Image (cartoon, rainbow, N blue to C red; front, side, top):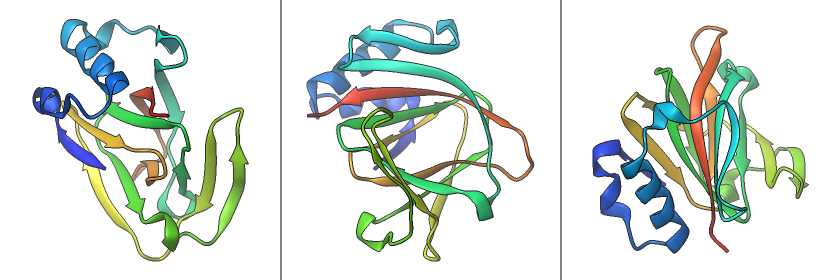
Amino acid sequence: MILDKLTNLKRYKNIHPNLDKAINWIENNSIDSIDPGKTLLDGDNLFVVNTELEGYNLENGLYEIHHKYADLHIVIDPKETIYYAQVDELNSVYKEYDTSIEMKLFHMTTRRNSFKLNKDEFAFFFPYEAHGPKIVETNRPVKKLIFKIKMN
């Protein structure tokens, strides 16, 4: 997992070619110009989802893991809390891996680590890194961009 400021994103080039494509796209385009919904940037190798999702309170939060894709989260509406945990600590499956959404979901465990993702920051999660996004203090939507980066 990587948490950093968007201005430092270029430091993470050369980790993976598809991540480089995402970084180059972000450097050369306005993230405010992305239409709502899914936008293909390089077919299924790289796409971005501009979304407004209903936030969860902590009791209803879920961890998610992906097998093939890394997630690069950029918050538009700040104050989203994201939790993360080691996959081997997750033992309460909410939904088994679903290839159509490329995700497995777990109930949140008692051991939790968290950070607030603020505007002008990003969070990057490699495949198999458990993360619980969309946790908000009040019941409101979370506006964000999620770059989906195929890693294998």
